[in-house]
Amino acid sequence: MAGVKNSKLKLLYLYDILDRETDEAHPLNASQLCDALKEYGITAERKSIYKDIDVLKDYGCDVIHNGSKLTGGYFIGSRKFEPAELRLLSDAVQAANFISAKKTQRLVEKIESMASKSQAKVLHDQVYVDNRPKCRNEELYYTISFIDDAIHDGVKITFLYSRRRIGKDFKASREEKRFTVSPYAMIWMDDHYYLVCNNEKYDNLMHLRIDKIKRLEVTKEKMRPFSEISDYKVKFDSADYASKLFNMYGGSEPKPVELICDNELLETMLDRFGETLKLQQNDENRFLLKTNAVVSDGLAAWVLQFGGRVEVKTPKELRRKVAEGAKAALAHYE
Image 1 (cartoon, rainbow, N blue to C red):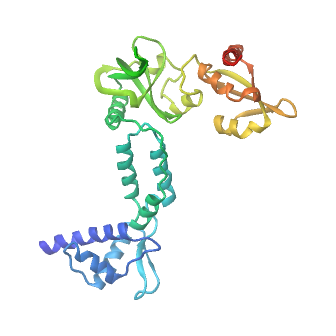
Image 2: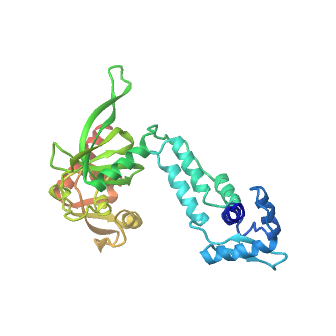
């Protein structure tokens, strides 16, 4: 029985060695694989390695041999993630300021473990870490998991929500308030992770930063159907919902919006609203943009950042908000 057990372990260890140690630039031949297996207390001959490689190939492992049978070596070809994909994942984790520094380090290490040793070293050596502040809430993983469970089970959650306020000594202090809400979706936007939910006291959707949530508990109380407070009847479409928001400000239902933009802002507008954006010429230097969006202070602030390069044509409500914002800003400098 010990021989059968070692035979099965040998195949598993062989795959681990190939996965961890090899890539196209770092193949291992049969003799080197035999030496590597000795570190696990398993004795193997070169001929048995060839048979084991065939078994791994039959299973679906992309084990490639380069060169001749005597001088070449074996390596793992395609993996679940290519190095460029791991780079994107690693950069995204590091850029997310809602993930704590400790969790960021552990996540990056896990991402690197999906590459070969040499690929992982290249990834690690190229890690760019700016000095942006990181979240200190170590409950984040548990919070996300509990919210997922609550959304799936259709029940409410209760938690403490932390906000920063200016205290009497004019220093920032934290204020905590308990919320009981019906959770519908989680959205990553503007460098933060938000919970889209309904406070049981109101008939609208609200957005709360997940990194500000503490001591979350899943209740047994059924959540309020999102069809009662949104346009979504069968499924809450978080992608569609997020596309109509600006800076996660809430507001009324989406309305038709028309913006007159300088031609140089075409890329910016397509990036923000998507390639299917409706455009038409306004004059030689400007185009008219038509879309649907929630009219909010967030949208007004977004338009204001472009100064005179963007003009709101409709609706009047948004035009008024932008004008009031411009006047308020100007008043500080007059």
